[in-house]
Image (tube, rainbow, N blue to C red; front, side, top):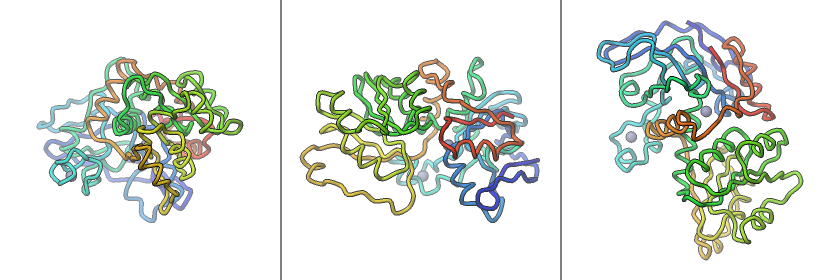
Amino acid sequence: MRAAVAGLPGQVQIVEFPEPKLAPGELILAPLACGICSTDVKLVQRGAEEANYALGHELAGRVVAASQESRWSVGQRVVAVPYLPCGECFYCRHAQPTLCGRLFDTAFLPGALAEEIWVPSRISECGLFSIPDDLPDEIAALAEPVGCVVKGIQDANLQPGDTVLVVGDGPMGLFCATVARAYGAARVLVAGLTPSRLACAGEYYADQIIDLNQEELVGTVQDATEGRGADVVMVAVSDGEALLNGIKAVRPGGTVNAFAGVSNGVQIPLDVRKLHYQQFFLTGSFGLGPEHMAKALQLLGSGRIDVAPLITARFPFESVAEAVAYAADRTGLKPVVIF
Ligand SMILES: [Zn+2]
Ligand SMILES: [Zn+2]
């Protein structure tokens, strides 16, 4: 069976992998749809010497083989967490599953962009969720990134009635905007630099867009909040400067979440006096656990969030390279590979 892998830096290759084999409790999925995100872009740009893993982790699939011990049956449509914490270590016992040192030890393989995907028994037991009948494959595939956002919004301690500022107009930023609304945000501001993305934000997700080509972030947020600043700031841009601006735009006692991953070594000068007297919270969020994916699927399935406008390009499996290039280009929003 074929899988899309990172090859030489900047290249995607489609290569042959051995057929997965089934042991007790395990499953085989055929992918239906897979979202492409900046993690895939990063893996492709970095390149891989050996093609051990397929790209893709935002998966909706169909069960095509299930061992007798499994509670799933052939034909069911499911989403799956791409990795599963061990459930036993210090961090797992302290309800901080994405700090688990063995987070990636239990994963579906070789990845979502493969014609067949092996699901280990632990994921089949507690990391798989049935897709509601009327939810399209391509929307269900986004339960993974939306689940990461659910975790991020929970980590930011968003309260009903809050004013939320999202710094960043990419797919994750706009997921943050819609999930914030579902968690009770009274007002959502989205700041960014890309006119086409800001237009989508303004049409579907934000009460106010802040075009950083023309407007200054902190003053605009203050004007919108009686001078206080935002209650919650989600920084969904891989950039230290964006985080620094997010910190300047938060109200005293509010929370800033460094939600986007950044490269090694990115540092910011932190005004420690302000941190002390204004008592704001600075946190980060990474990844998701099964409970976050379950919540994401519930939000998607109930229609409480609508992410359909974010899917701006669809590609066949043979064109994964184009899908990754589309995500890297950052003018559209979410590309999805449809099988
Ligand atoms: Zn992703
Ligand atoms: Zn653990």
